Image 1 (cartoon, one colour):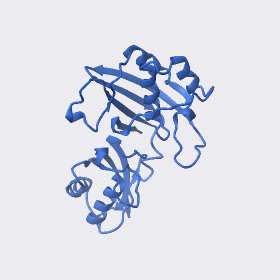
Image 2: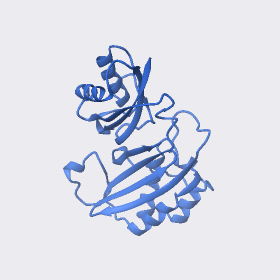
Image 3: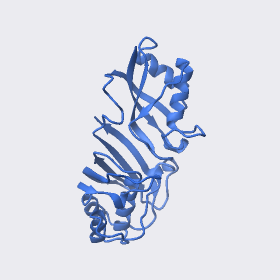
Length: 247
């Protein structure tokens, strides 16, 4: 008999080539599967809620695995996995769930946060965890522009090509929260789903608005897919965090 375990995973994306398994083996999924094999003695597939790119961090990524019910209890799995994982990757929680649960297909939404450092000097402890921008920003324009993303839209202009065409580019953004504490700016996106590089392209467009390179009317035209406005800026991955997966 197999039991399904739900895992909540956190990682520093700077140390991994993303979530999705690759030949070189330096991904979050590869690392988790290696440790499962070491503990269980057999290959165990780890199913994630979605992919994060190289450099992107996760506060609470979700995954599931199917294992023999009598091997270890969830607390024992938690201890065994973390004992074998590098310090940049940790399983925060482990619990039994119904076999109907699927980390990807049961998800109803995700929350991402993007962090920007607007000060002239980047503190060392923020290196690799924010996007350091030197040019002046208008915070009010950033707030106004961010609100334009809320609602159900076709985000084709805010998606990158992963090697195949997306059949459905419509997504619903429930909220976009913008906050500022000193030189640290945070943009939090809550939506039912996100396309490849969608958040990074949204952030790139918002920073263009806040610095005067793009008008809000031009942003709205892009959101409404009225026309292709040329240059698109994708914010770098190190400022992006997967905050949670909704179920």
